[in-house]
Structures are given as C-alpha cells and as structure tokens.
Image (cartoon, rainbow, N blue to C red; front, side, top):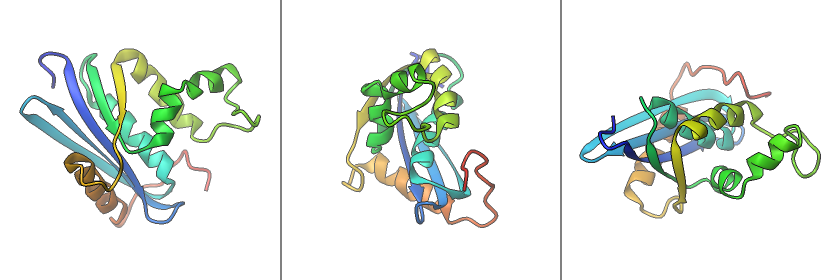
Length: 157
C-alpha cells in the first residue's frame, strides 16, 4: 500500500453495552489512497474492539512501514507508550495487582506487529469532530449492529 513505507492509520472500537455486540474500524491512508477495514463480534468489550482495530490495521500492511496511528483509546495508547505491556510480559502477564492481564490474547497478537512496523501512537479525543475518528466510530458502530456476528473466541463471556 505504501510507496514510501509511510502510512497513517485511524482506529476505533465500539461496543453496544460493555460487554455486548462490538465493532472495530481502521482507516489506512497513504498519500491520496485510503482503505477502510471493519468488523464485529456478537459479544465482546470496547477495549477488545479498540485493540483489535489496531491489530487488523497493522496486519493489513503488506511490508514494514512507518506508521502514525491515531486512536481515541487511552487504554491502547498508554499500554504501549507508558510501557505497561513490557511490565506485563516481565511479570508473566500479570498486572500491578498480580491479576491476569485482560485481553492477553490480543496483546500477544499485537507484539510481533509492533516489532515489524515503526509505530507512533497519537491520541485523539473521541466524538470531538475529528473527521477520520468520526468515520471510524460510525463504521465500528454499524459493524456492531449487524446480525449474524461471529463469536469473539478470546472473550471469556
């Protein structure tokens, strides 16, 4: 997708109830080109959908890229930027309260993607009128409302 190996990605996750039906969306842009990815699950959480949006976006890249990734999820951004994920791994996937880290299956899918791509995380306030974030929110909510959604096999509910 990226000629100069530089891509901008916008992501969002949505849950109708938490837990409840959920959806995720990612918009990948490179120059004049743009691609929208989205999907949903019948029972999941908002944080899982926020995280899955990032995973699906990075998985879609065909070769290593420099990525500016915009998310309205403090959970996702802080886990990377504040290096919570490093502590979780060192502590055998236990959090600071010695409890199992939630969404470990997704964090473990994200790690090799972060090793492949040079990702800079940026935070955007949700529902603030940011065009791409609003589009992601719309598509994620729409995906969560579809019928016949698959089961989120990583969600224990």
